[in-house]
Image 1 (cartoon, helix red, strand yellow):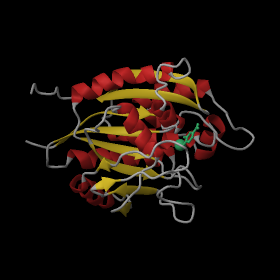
Image 2: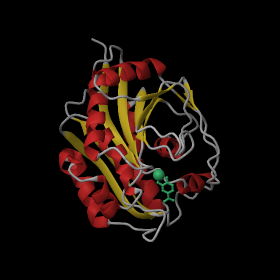
Image 3: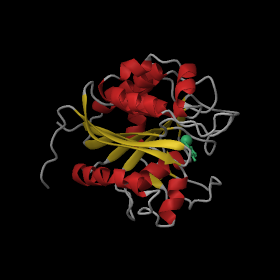
Image 4: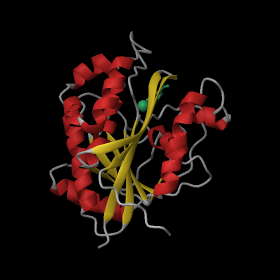
Length: 288
Ligand code: DHB
Ligand code: FE
C-alpha cells in the first residue's frame, strides 16, 4: 500500500547571521565551526533518507504576517514559496517548491480534526524557513518540497505548548492518512533560549535548555505543562520559538530515538541547538 511515511524530525535554529556567515564562507572560523559541524550528521542523515517532503513548523517574523493580522496557526498551500529581503543584510534566498496536493490534504484533515487553520495560497517564507533549509542542504539545489506551517510566537496571546504539541499530533495523524507515497520529515525551527530586546537582551539559560533537549525526546508532555509566561521567564521572550519544536515533536511517533544532538552557545544572541529524532519502527529505505 502506498502512503505517506514519517521518518523523523530535525530541530534547527534559524538565526539570520548564519546566512551572512554562509555568504562569507565562514563555516570553519573558530566562532562558527562548532555550530556548523553540528550539521555534518544531518547531511549524512538527509543523504541517506532521501525525503520527498519536509513539513516545517516555524514562526513568521513580520515578512508574511504583521502585527495587524497574525493568525495563531497558518498553513501554506502554494506551488512555490518565495523569500524577500527582510532587512538583515543577507542574500535573498531562492524559492522553495511546495506540495499543494499534500497541503490540501493536511488542511482538510486538520480542520476536520478541529484545528482551524488559516489557509495561505500565497505565502512568503522568511529566515525561519530559509536558514534551516540552507543549513540542511547547503548545495545548489533543494531536493524536497515543503509544507510550511507557521505558529504565532510573536504577539500575545500565544498558543500554549500543549496546544502546539496537539497540533503536531494532528499533523502526524493527517500525514498517515495521505494515500500517496511520500517520505516525510518534520522540521521545527528557532530557539533555544534567547531574548533579543529589553532589559534581558542576550539572556540565555543553559540549564533550562538542556532540560528541554532531554524532555523533548520522550517526555514532551512534561514541557507542555509550562505556561507561556513561565516559559518567557525561563527561556527569554523569543525562547517561545520552542513552540515550533513542540509541534514537530507532536508529529512524530509517541516514542522516538534521538540520533543526533548539538548544543552551542552563543550564535548571535541565542543558544543554538540541532537535533535529529527518528520515529520508532522507521522503515528502512529500499535499495534503489
Ligand atoms: C536572532 C534570533 C532569531 O530567532 C531571529 O528570528 C532573528 C535574530 C538573533 O539572535 O540574532
Ligand atoms: Fe526567530
